[in-house]
Image (tube, rainbow, N blue to C red; front, side, top):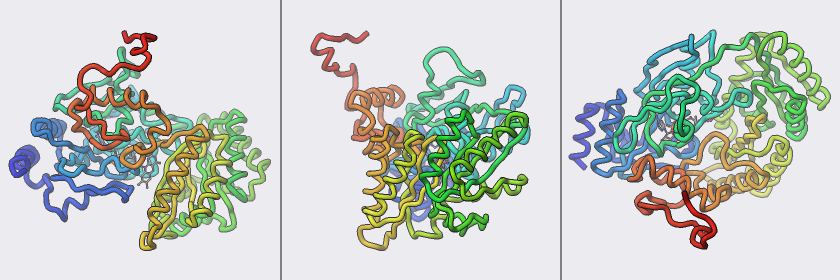
Length: 481
Ligand SMILES: Cc1cc2nc3c(=O)[nH]c(=O)nc-3n(C[C@H](O)[C@H](O)[C@H](O)COP(=O)(O)OP(=O)(O)OC[C@H]3O[C@@H](n4cnc5c(N)ncnc54)[C@H](O)[C@@H]3O)c2cc1C
């Protein structure tokens, strides 16, 4: 152990290798505080070469490691593994190249999402906008395939990564893609994006950025409940309109946000939709009128149209503050992240209400309604015996409901450690084996973020060599090419 630490210090210098138990507590969990771990050490590299050297040391000593960006993840992905090394990328914050002529920016992984936006603005912007954007890192966004309010129209992180430099678990450096939109061969960037730190560490990221739209129009429409708000979302999309964003807040989340930002949301409203349209003025203006008409036809109880950039910013600040604002109405909460087909939103929200009543725990809902991506925030008090367990059980039932309604166990927060137990609700054993083989192809030693994502301890070492035969092959009904 002492020898290992000395090797890490030789790479990063003593001041960037954290070993003291108190100091390591900074890194013990991510944004989902349920899961904690204590690594042997946390190393904070300054460059891709240092990352590569750290991973090589781990490889030679067969020590597992976990990459960490800003630690805002909500599925426990960056939780350290005991007896492993945490590789913290937050010091790697260089913007390497801004190439607006080709609509690209090349950054190190520790650059925050908001810094990318600032670097290419005001003429361009980077659309994926997680609500945590002022702090979360682009490396974390890549690993989680993060989304955000504007992904309904613009797509997720995976639609914006054109090139990656990655350090593989044997310490090799690989370059995937570049500035081109698509390259020949297998889409390894697509494989890496969303791999949650299990395939390697991204050390350089090339992103596509897009021109800032000519105009943006934003409103908040209030409804008496989530049923009518949910139907309005479907009506808008069915009307052929693709808003840049449609976000829903129920009354409990509005109450929390209002206490945080004093935006002036009416306390009697049962639900609110934040709707934003963008594009050329000639297209946006009439569509915005159509949206207003649809909200009115859906019995909106009131509407607030942003009159200027300051009011628009306040509307978004209020929406994006939602998770943090929950602290004003509950001592603890558990964030769930699941997806249902958009048309089934009212039904899903009704079932969440029923579960909330059955479990005696309040649930606030604030989410990306256009994508059907729910974020129920289950309120509980950890000092009340049994409440954390009840909250977790309730969260599990919400996930099961999402799958039952034809959706997914996660929309954007990833599987991490929290959701791996639900993976088999969506995927067959054969599917999981296929995932596992991809993982082993990148990391045969099982050192990269082990114990995350896959449901059972499927260590790569357990299935070396040829894949076992499928029952159809054994029966002579199929053959592998
Ligand atoms: C208040 C709040 C609001 C949020 N809103 C949203 C939202 O709207 N949309 C959304 O999608 N998410 C949201 N999140 C979740 C979170 O911010 C995102 O998942 C984000 O991408 C995590 O980035 P990070 O830098 O904090 O990563 P971390 O939490 O540090 O790590 C996340 C995962 O990425 C891996 N990783 C980190 N860096 C690298 C790298 N360079 N190479 C390889 N793997 C790496 C880690 O091992 C881990 O598995 C929110 C979180 C909070 C706290």
